[in-house]
Amino acid sequence: MLLKKANILIVDDDTDVLTAVKLLLKTEAQEVVTEKNPENLNWLLKKSRPDLILLDMNFTSAINTGNEGLYWLRKIKEWIPDACVIMITAYGDIDLAVRSLKEGAADFIVKPWHNDKLIDTIKDLLDKIGANKTTKPTAAKQTASGTSILGDSPVMQDIFLKVNKVAPTDANILILGENGTGKDLMAKAIHERSMRANKPFIKVDVGALTDSLFESELFGHKKGAFTDAREERAGRFEDANGGTLFLDEIGNISLHQQAKLLTVLQNRQVTRLGNNKATDIDIRLICATNLPLTELANENRFRKDLIYRINTVEVTMPPLRKRAGDVMILARHFAKVYAAKYLKPAVSFDESAVQKLLQYNYPGNIRELQYAIERAVIMADEATMRASDLIFSSIESVAEVAEPMDDMPLSMVEKQTILRVIEKHSGNITRAAKELGLTRTALYRRLSKYDI
Image (cartoon, rainbow, N blue to C red):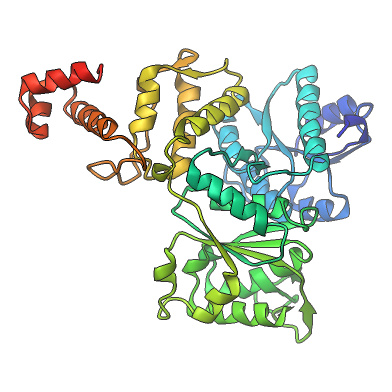
Protein backbone atom coordinates (compact mmCIF):
# COMPACT_ATOMS: atom_id res chain seq x y z
CA MET A 1 0.00 0.00 0.00
CA LEU A 2 1.30 3.46 -0.89
CA LEU A 3 1.72 6.01 1.89
CA LYS A 4 -0.14 8.54 -0.30
CA LYS A 5 -3.28 6.38 -0.03
CA ALA A 6 -2.95 5.55 3.66
CA ASN A 7 -5.16 6.53 6.58
CA ILE A 8 -2.99 6.99 9.68
CA LEU A 9 -4.13 7.39 13.30
CA ILE A 10 -1.81 8.94 15.94
CA VAL A 11 -2.68 8.45 19.63
CA ASP A 12 -0.60 10.40 22.16
CA ASP A 13 -1.53 12.67 25.08
CA ASP A 14 1.36 15.02 24.22
CA THR A 15 -0.02 17.78 21.97
CA ASP A 16 3.47 18.63 20.72
CA VAL A 17 3.98 15.07 19.50
CA LEU A 18 0.60 15.02 17.76
CA THR A 19 1.33 18.32 16.04
CA ALA A 20 4.84 17.30 14.97
CA VAL A 21 3.77 13.97 13.47
CA LYS A 22 0.72 15.44 11.76
CA LEU A 23 2.83 18.19 10.15
CA LEU A 24 5.35 15.58 9.02
CA LEU A 25 2.77 13.22 7.49
CA LYS A 26 0.01 15.52 6.26
CA THR A 27 1.65 15.94 2.83
CA GLU A 28 2.72 12.27 2.74
CA ALA A 29 -0.50 10.42 3.65
CA GLN A 30 -4.09 10.62 2.44
CA GLU A 31 -5.47 11.24 5.92
CA VAL A 32 -3.88 11.82 9.33
CA VAL A 33 -6.10 11.64 12.42
CA THR A 34 -4.82 12.61 15.88
CA GLU A 35 -6.29 11.70 19.27
CA LYS A 36 -5.15 12.66 22.80
CA ASN A 37 -7.46 10.34 24.76
CA PRO A 38 -6.99 6.58 24.20
CA GLU A 39 -10.42 6.02 25.77
CA ASN A 40 -11.83 7.12 22.39
CA LEU A 41 -9.92 4.43 20.48
CA ASN A 42 -12.81 1.98 20.13
CA TRP A 43 -15.06 4.67 18.67
CA LEU A 44 -12.33 5.90 16.31
CA LEU A 45 -11.55 2.40 15.04
CA LYS A 46 -15.23 1.73 14.35
CA LYS A 47 -15.69 5.09 12.63
CA SER A 48 -12.74 4.79 10.25
CA ARG A 49 -10.47 1.78 10.35
CA PRO A 50 -6.93 3.19 9.91
CA ASP A 51 -4.27 1.46 7.83
CA LEU A 52 -1.64 2.15 10.48
CA ILE A 53 -1.68 3.36 14.10
CA LEU A 54 1.05 5.26 15.96
CA LEU A 55 0.48 4.62 19.69
CA ASP A 56 2.31 6.17 22.66
CA MET A 57 3.64 3.84 25.37
CA ASN A 58 2.61 6.07 28.31
CA PHE A 59 -0.53 8.05 29.04
CA THR A 60 -1.50 10.07 32.11
CA SER A 61 -4.82 8.24 32.20
CA ALA A 62 -7.03 6.57 34.76
CA ILE A 63 -5.26 3.26 34.18
CA ASN A 64 -1.95 4.70 35.40
CA THR A 65 -0.02 1.41 35.53
CA GLY A 66 3.13 2.48 33.71
CA ASN A 67 2.14 0.02 30.97
CA GLU A 68 -0.69 2.05 29.43
CA GLY A 69 0.62 1.59 25.91
CA LEU A 70 0.66 -2.19 26.30
CA TYR A 71 -2.89 -2.10 27.66
CA TRP A 72 -4.20 -0.12 24.68
CA LEU A 73 -2.17 -2.24 22.24
CA ARG A 74 -3.90 -5.36 23.59
CA LYS A 75 -7.26 -3.63 23.25
CA ILE A 76 -6.54 -2.66 19.64
CA LYS A 77 -5.44 -6.22 18.78
CA GLU A 78 -8.57 -7.52 20.49
CA TRP A 79 -10.81 -5.25 18.43
CA ILE A 80 -8.82 -5.56 15.16
CA PRO A 81 -6.46 -8.58 15.29
CA ASP A 82 -4.57 -7.62 12.11
CA ALA A 83 -4.12 -3.93 13.07
CA CYS A 84 -0.69 -2.51 12.24
CA VAL A 85 0.60 -0.62 15.30
CA ILE A 86 3.86 1.28 15.78
CA MET A 87 4.65 2.10 19.41
CA ILE A 88 6.13 5.50 20.32
CA THR A 89 8.49 5.23 23.29
CA ALA A 90 11.09 7.16 25.23
CA TYR A 91 14.61 5.72 25.46
CA GLY A 92 14.05 4.63 29.06
CA ASP A 93 11.04 2.51 28.08
CA ILE A 94 12.74 0.37 25.43
CA ASP A 95 12.22 -2.77 27.53
CA LEU A 96 8.47 -2.11 27.43
CA ALA A 97 8.67 -1.46 23.70
CA VAL A 98 10.37 -4.82 23.16
CA ARG A 99 7.56 -6.43 25.16
CA SER A 100 5.08 -4.70 22.88
CA LEU A 101 6.52 -6.60 19.90
CA LYS A 102 5.58 -9.85 21.62
CA GLU A 103 2.10 -8.44 22.23
CA GLY A 104 1.60 -7.86 18.50
CA ALA A 105 3.08 -4.44 17.71
CA ALA A 106 4.60 -4.23 14.23
CA ASP A 107 7.51 -1.97 15.31
CA PHE A 108 8.49 0.82 17.68
CA ILE A 109 10.20 4.21 17.36
CA VAL A 110 12.19 6.03 20.03
CA LYS A 111 11.67 9.71 20.86
CA PRO A 112 13.20 11.92 19.59
CA TRP A 113 13.06 10.23 16.19
CA HIS A 114 14.58 11.08 12.83
CA ASN A 115 11.83 12.13 10.43
CA ASP A 116 13.28 10.18 7.50
CA LYS A 117 13.56 7.04 9.64
CA LEU A 118 9.94 7.34 10.80
CA ILE A 119 8.65 7.79 7.23
CA ASP A 120 10.75 4.84 6.00
CA THR A 121 9.40 2.63 8.82
CA ILE A 122 5.81 3.56 7.96
CA LYS A 123 6.40 3.00 4.23
CA ASP A 124 7.94 -0.45 4.85
CA LEU A 125 5.01 -1.56 6.98
CA LEU A 126 2.45 -0.26 4.51
CA ASP A 127 4.27 -2.11 1.72
CA LYS A 128 3.95 -5.33 3.72
CA ILE A 129 0.24 -4.67 4.30
CA GLY A 130 -0.25 -4.13 0.56
CA ALA A 131 1.67 -7.30 -0.30
CA ASN A 132 -0.43 -9.37 2.13
CA LYS A 133 -3.65 -8.03 0.60
CA THR A 134 -2.66 -8.66 -3.01
CA THR A 135 -0.76 -11.92 -2.67
CA LYS A 136 -3.01 -14.96 -2.41
CA PRO A 137 -1.46 -17.69 -0.22
CA THR A 138 -0.43 -20.69 -2.29
CA ALA A 139 0.66 -23.15 0.37
CA ALA A 140 0.17 -23.92 4.01
CA LYS A 141 3.71 -22.67 4.62
CA GLN A 142 2.68 -19.05 3.93
CA THR A 143 3.32 -16.40 6.55
CA ALA A 144 0.74 -16.32 9.33
CA SER A 145 0.68 -13.56 11.97
CA GLY A 146 4.27 -12.58 11.14
CA THR A 147 5.82 -16.02 11.65
CA SER A 148 6.10 -18.55 8.82
CA ILE A 149 4.99 -22.12 9.32
CA LEU A 150 8.16 -23.78 8.13
CA GLY A 151 9.27 -27.39 7.93
CA ASP A 152 10.70 -29.98 5.59
CA SER A 153 10.26 -32.97 7.91
CA PRO A 154 7.95 -35.74 6.66
CA VAL A 155 5.46 -35.15 9.48
CA MET A 156 5.10 -31.47 8.54
CA GLN A 157 4.78 -32.26 4.84
CA ASP A 158 1.88 -34.58 5.69
CA ILE A 159 0.23 -31.75 7.67
CA PHE A 160 0.69 -29.26 4.82
CA LEU A 161 -0.95 -31.75 2.44
CA LYS A 162 -3.93 -32.23 4.76
CA VAL A 163 -4.32 -28.49 5.36
CA ASN A 164 -4.25 -27.69 1.64
CA LYS A 165 -7.12 -30.14 1.17
CA VAL A 166 -9.30 -29.08 4.08
CA ALA A 167 -8.65 -25.31 4.28
CA PRO A 168 -10.82 -24.32 1.26
CA THR A 169 -13.81 -26.14 2.78
CA ASP A 170 -16.01 -24.98 5.66
CA ALA A 171 -15.27 -28.08 7.74
CA ASN A 172 -14.79 -27.47 11.47
CA ILE A 173 -11.21 -28.24 12.50
CA LEU A 174 -9.71 -29.31 15.82
CA ILE A 175 -5.99 -28.60 16.19
CA LEU A 176 -4.20 -30.75 18.76
CA GLY A 177 -0.67 -30.40 20.11
CA GLU A 178 1.53 -29.45 23.02
CA ASN A 179 1.97 -25.84 24.06
CA GLY A 180 4.30 -23.94 21.74
CA THR A 181 3.85 -26.14 18.67
CA GLY A 182 2.18 -23.43 16.58
CA LYS A 183 -1.52 -24.26 16.88
CA ASP A 184 -2.60 -20.61 16.68
CA LEU A 185 -0.43 -19.97 13.61
CA MET A 186 -1.84 -23.04 11.91
CA ALA A 187 -5.37 -21.79 12.62
CA LYS A 188 -4.52 -18.46 10.96
CA ALA A 189 -2.91 -20.25 7.99
CA ILE A 190 -6.06 -22.34 7.51
CA HIS A 191 -8.16 -19.17 7.53
CA GLU A 192 -5.89 -17.53 4.94
CA ARG A 193 -6.24 -20.58 2.67
CA SER A 194 -10.04 -20.63 3.02
CA MET A 195 -12.81 -19.02 0.99
CA ARG A 196 -13.28 -16.69 4.00
CA ALA A 197 -9.76 -15.23 3.83
CA ASN A 198 -11.02 -11.68 3.29
CA LYS A 199 -13.42 -11.92 6.23
CA PRO A 200 -12.65 -11.58 9.97
CA PHE A 201 -10.40 -14.01 11.85
CA ILE A 202 -11.36 -13.77 15.52
CA LYS A 203 -9.36 -15.56 18.22
CA VAL A 204 -10.70 -16.19 21.74
CA ASP A 205 -8.80 -17.92 24.56
CA VAL A 206 -11.90 -19.58 25.96
CA GLY A 207 -9.88 -21.47 28.57
CA ALA A 208 -9.24 -18.19 30.38
CA LEU A 209 -12.91 -17.15 30.57
CA THR A 210 -14.87 -17.57 33.78
CA ASP A 211 -18.47 -18.75 33.63
CA SER A 212 -19.67 -15.17 34.19
CA LEU A 213 -17.62 -13.84 31.26
CA PHE A 214 -18.05 -16.77 28.87
CA GLU A 215 -21.52 -15.91 27.56
CA SER A 216 -20.91 -12.15 27.46
CA GLU A 217 -17.61 -12.54 25.58
CA LEU A 218 -18.85 -15.09 23.04
CA PHE A 219 -22.52 -14.17 22.64
CA GLY A 220 -22.57 -10.47 23.55
CA HIS A 221 -24.92 -8.55 25.86
CA LYS A 222 -27.47 -5.75 26.01
CA LYS A 223 -26.87 -2.59 27.97
CA GLY A 224 -27.81 -3.22 31.60
CA ALA A 225 -27.77 -7.02 31.26
CA PHE A 226 -25.45 -7.12 34.29
CA THR A 227 -23.74 -4.62 36.60
CA ASP A 228 -20.87 -3.55 34.32
CA ALA A 229 -22.80 -3.73 31.04
CA ARG A 230 -22.68 0.02 30.32
CA GLU A 231 -23.28 -0.36 26.60
CA GLU A 232 -24.61 -2.95 24.18
CA ARG A 233 -21.89 -5.18 22.80
CA ALA A 234 -21.71 -7.84 20.11
CA GLY A 235 -20.02 -11.10 21.07
CA ARG A 236 -17.17 -12.84 19.27
CA PHE A 237 -19.55 -15.04 17.26
CA GLU A 238 -21.12 -11.94 15.72
CA ASP A 239 -17.69 -10.30 15.25
CA ALA A 240 -16.58 -13.36 13.27
CA ASN A 241 -19.73 -13.53 11.13
CA GLY A 242 -18.79 -14.47 7.58
CA GLY A 243 -15.27 -15.39 8.69
CA THR A 244 -13.46 -17.74 11.06
CA LEU A 245 -13.82 -18.07 14.83
CA PHE A 246 -10.80 -19.64 16.55
CA LEU A 247 -11.47 -20.96 20.07
CA ASP A 248 -8.14 -21.66 21.74
CA GLU A 249 -7.76 -23.97 24.78
CA ILE A 250 -11.21 -25.45 24.15
CA GLY A 251 -10.33 -28.41 26.40
CA ASN A 252 -10.34 -26.18 29.49
CA ILE A 253 -13.96 -25.01 29.39
CA SER A 254 -16.48 -26.32 31.92
CA LEU A 255 -19.33 -28.71 31.15
CA HIS A 256 -21.77 -25.83 31.67
CA GLN A 257 -19.91 -23.73 29.10
CA GLN A 258 -19.80 -26.70 26.72
CA ALA A 259 -23.59 -27.00 26.83
CA LYS A 260 -24.01 -23.31 25.96
CA LEU A 261 -21.51 -23.60 23.10
CA LEU A 262 -23.12 -26.74 21.72
CA THR A 263 -26.53 -25.06 21.58
CA VAL A 264 -25.15 -22.17 19.52
CA LEU A 265 -23.30 -24.47 17.13
CA GLN A 266 -26.38 -26.65 16.61
CA ASN A 267 -28.78 -23.74 16.04
CA ARG A 268 -26.29 -21.47 14.22
CA GLN A 269 -27.76 -18.62 16.25
CA VAL A 270 -26.65 -16.51 19.20
CA THR A 271 -28.74 -14.61 21.72
CA ARG A 272 -27.11 -11.71 23.55
CA LEU A 273 -27.40 -11.69 27.34
CA GLY A 274 -30.46 -9.70 28.36
CA ASN A 275 -32.06 -10.11 24.94
CA ASN A 276 -34.66 -12.57 23.67
CA LYS A 277 -33.93 -12.07 19.98
CA ALA A 278 -31.69 -14.65 18.30
CA THR A 279 -29.20 -13.61 15.59
CA ASP A 280 -28.17 -15.95 12.77
CA ILE A 281 -24.43 -16.57 12.46
CA ASP A 282 -22.28 -17.84 9.63
CA ILE A 283 -18.84 -18.85 10.86
CA ARG A 284 -16.14 -21.40 10.18
CA LEU A 285 -15.05 -22.87 13.53
CA ILE A 286 -11.47 -23.83 14.41
CA CYS A 287 -10.66 -25.06 17.91
CA ALA A 288 -7.38 -25.97 19.60
CA THR A 289 -6.29 -27.75 22.76
CA ASN A 290 -3.12 -29.14 24.29
CA LEU A 291 -5.05 -32.12 25.69
CA PRO A 292 -4.69 -35.47 23.89
CA LEU A 293 -7.89 -36.61 22.18
CA THR A 294 -8.14 -39.65 24.48
CA GLU A 295 -8.29 -37.34 27.52
CA LEU A 296 -10.69 -34.98 25.77
CA ALA A 297 -13.02 -37.91 25.07
CA ASN A 298 -13.56 -38.53 28.81
CA GLU A 299 -17.24 -37.61 29.23
CA ASN A 300 -16.62 -36.55 32.82
CA ARG A 301 -14.49 -33.76 31.35
CA PHE A 302 -15.83 -33.08 27.86
CA ARG A 303 -19.08 -33.83 26.03
CA LYS A 304 -18.68 -36.29 23.18
CA ASP A 305 -21.46 -34.64 21.17
CA LEU A 306 -19.46 -31.40 21.27
CA ILE A 307 -16.27 -33.20 20.19
CA TYR A 308 -18.07 -34.53 17.12
CA ARG A 309 -19.40 -31.04 16.41
CA ILE A 310 -15.99 -29.33 16.51
CA ASN A 311 -13.90 -32.16 15.10
CA THR A 312 -14.89 -32.76 11.48
CA VAL A 313 -11.17 -32.89 10.73
CA GLU A 314 -8.33 -32.95 13.24
CA VAL A 315 -4.79 -31.65 12.70
CA THR A 316 -2.10 -32.67 15.18
CA MET A 317 0.87 -30.32 15.46
CA PRO A 318 3.93 -32.42 16.37
CA PRO A 319 6.36 -31.41 19.13
CA LEU A 320 9.65 -30.03 17.86
CA ARG A 321 11.53 -33.07 19.14
CA LYS A 322 9.56 -35.14 16.59
CA ARG A 323 10.53 -32.88 13.69
CA ALA A 324 14.04 -34.04 12.83
CA GLY A 325 15.58 -31.65 10.33
CA ASP A 326 13.36 -28.64 11.09
CA VAL A 327 15.27 -27.15 14.03
CA MET A 328 17.90 -25.32 12.00
CA ILE A 329 15.34 -24.16 9.40
CA LEU A 330 13.38 -22.51 12.20
CA ALA A 331 16.47 -21.24 14.04
CA ARG A 332 17.82 -19.51 10.91
CA HIS A 333 14.39 -18.04 10.20
CA PHE A 334 14.08 -16.58 13.71
CA ALA A 335 17.68 -15.31 13.58
CA LYS A 336 16.90 -13.45 10.36
CA VAL A 337 13.68 -11.98 11.75
CA TYR A 338 15.23 -10.73 14.99
CA ALA A 339 18.45 -9.50 13.42
CA ALA A 340 16.31 -7.25 11.20
CA LYS A 341 14.07 -6.26 14.11
CA TYR A 342 16.92 -5.23 16.41
CA LEU A 343 19.10 -3.72 13.64
CA LYS A 344 21.79 -6.39 14.04
CA PRO A 345 24.02 -7.75 11.26
CA ALA A 346 23.02 -11.02 9.59
CA VAL A 347 23.43 -13.89 12.06
CA SER A 348 25.11 -17.22 11.37
CA PHE A 349 25.71 -20.25 13.63
CA ASP A 350 29.05 -21.91 14.23
CA GLU A 351 29.28 -25.68 14.62
CA SER A 352 29.05 -25.57 18.42
CA ALA A 353 25.81 -23.57 18.22
CA VAL A 354 24.35 -25.95 15.61
CA GLN A 355 25.17 -28.96 17.77
CA LYS A 356 23.64 -27.36 20.87
CA LEU A 357 20.46 -26.53 18.96
CA LEU A 358 20.19 -30.05 17.53
CA GLN A 359 20.87 -31.79 20.84
CA TYR A 360 18.31 -29.96 22.94
CA ASN A 361 14.93 -31.58 23.61
CA TYR A 362 12.71 -28.44 23.44
CA PRO A 363 10.07 -29.08 26.12
CA GLY A 364 8.70 -25.63 25.22
CA ASN A 365 8.69 -26.51 21.50
CA ILE A 366 8.93 -23.82 18.80
CA ARG A 367 8.06 -21.03 21.22
CA GLU A 368 11.06 -21.93 23.40
CA LEU A 369 13.36 -22.03 20.36
CA GLN A 370 12.03 -18.69 19.17
CA TYR A 371 12.65 -16.94 22.50
CA ALA A 372 16.10 -18.53 22.83
CA ILE A 373 17.10 -17.20 19.40
CA GLU A 374 15.61 -13.77 20.09
CA ARG A 375 17.55 -13.50 23.35
CA ALA A 376 20.74 -14.70 21.68
CA VAL A 377 20.44 -12.17 18.83
CA ILE A 378 20.01 -9.35 21.34
CA MET A 379 22.84 -10.40 23.65
CA ALA A 380 25.44 -11.85 21.25
CA ASP A 381 28.56 -9.72 20.76
CA GLU A 382 29.35 -11.07 17.31
CA ALA A 383 27.42 -11.96 14.16
CA THR A 384 28.52 -15.61 14.42
CA MET A 385 26.54 -17.25 17.18
CA ARG A 386 28.28 -19.74 19.46
CA ALA A 387 26.91 -22.37 21.82
CA SER A 388 27.59 -20.05 24.77
CA ASP A 389 25.23 -17.47 23.27
CA LEU A 390 22.29 -19.90 23.41
CA ILE A 391 20.53 -20.10 26.76
CA PHE A 392 17.37 -22.15 27.06
CA SER A 393 14.63 -21.23 29.48
CA SER A 394 14.84 -22.68 32.98
CA ILE A 395 11.05 -22.48 33.33
CA GLU A 396 10.56 -25.55 31.16
CA SER A 397 10.66 -28.93 32.90
CA VAL A 398 13.34 -30.79 30.99
CA ALA A 399 13.52 -34.54 31.37
CA GLU A 400 16.80 -35.81 32.79
CA VAL A 401 17.44 -37.86 29.68
CA ALA A 402 16.51 -36.10 26.46
CA GLU A 403 14.20 -37.97 24.11
CA PRO A 404 16.00 -38.53 20.77
CA MET A 405 14.44 -37.14 17.63
CA ASP A 406 12.79 -39.53 15.20
CA ASP A 407 15.02 -41.25 12.64
CA MET A 408 18.18 -40.25 14.53
CA PRO A 409 21.11 -42.69 13.98
CA LEU A 410 22.31 -44.63 17.01
CA SER A 411 25.73 -42.99 16.72
CA MET A 412 24.14 -39.54 17.01
CA VAL A 413 22.17 -40.66 20.08
CA GLU A 414 25.42 -41.84 21.70
CA LYS A 415 27.19 -38.59 20.80
CA GLN A 416 24.37 -36.51 22.20
CA THR A 417 24.33 -38.52 25.44
CA ILE A 418 28.08 -38.06 25.90
CA LEU A 419 27.86 -34.32 25.26
CA ARG A 420 24.94 -33.94 27.65
CA VAL A 421 26.70 -35.81 30.49
CA ILE A 422 29.99 -33.95 29.98
CA GLU A 423 28.14 -30.62 30.06
CA LYS A 424 26.28 -31.74 33.18
CA HIS A 425 29.61 -32.34 34.96
CA SER A 426 31.18 -29.12 33.62
CA GLY A 427 33.77 -30.99 31.55
CA ASN A 428 34.94 -33.34 34.33
CA ILE A 429 35.83 -36.48 32.34
CA THR A 430 36.18 -38.73 35.40
CA ARG A 431 32.66 -37.99 36.66
CA ALA A 432 31.18 -38.14 33.15
CA ALA A 433 32.81 -41.55 32.49
CA LYS A 434 31.48 -42.87 35.81
CA GLU A 435 27.89 -41.81 34.99
CA LEU A 436 28.16 -43.30 31.48
CA GLY A 437 29.52 -46.60 32.84
CA LEU A 438 32.78 -46.25 30.91
CA THR A 439 36.45 -46.09 31.78
CA ARG A 440 38.23 -42.80 31.19
CA THR A 441 40.16 -44.45 28.32
CA ALA A 442 36.96 -45.70 26.67
CA LEU A 443 35.37 -42.26 26.98
CA TYR A 444 38.45 -40.59 25.43
CA ARG A 445 38.21 -43.05 22.50
CA ARG A 446 34.60 -42.00 21.91
CA LEU A 447 35.51 -38.32 22.17
CA SER A 448 38.08 -38.89 19.44
CA LYS A 449 35.63 -40.97 17.37
CA TYR A 450 32.95 -38.24 17.41
CA ASP A 451 35.48 -35.39 17.14
CA ILE A 452 34.25 -33.85 20.38
